[in-house]
Amino acid sequence: MTDITVYNLPSCPFCMKVTSKLEELGLEYDRIDVPAAHSERTEVEAVSGQTGVPVLTDEAHDVEGMAESDDIVAYLEETYGNAA
Image (cartoon, rainbow, N blue to C red; front, side, top):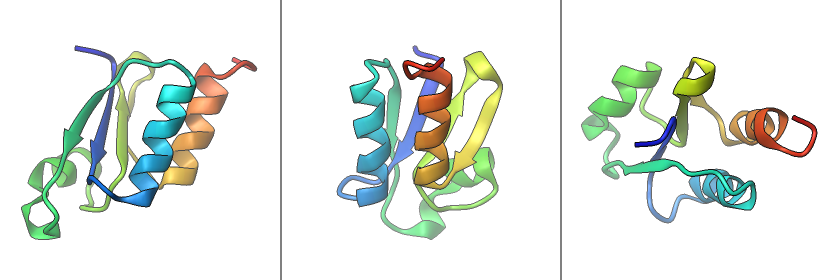
């Protein structure tokens, strides 16, 4: 188990943006694929308070339920990128 978990919907361009950044940075992460129906995304809602994806958690930095792909990518670059 890794510190980083991404809640993902396969073929979602925003999710792909986040997973591409994780791979670019060489980070290990767990990916949890969620159902297409928002009403079935109870695990995502429990973590983030909403049903949209992507959602990121990072136990090493006390990040739980970060949403919005641009915010997640900025966080990853700031925390794990070359400037970190």
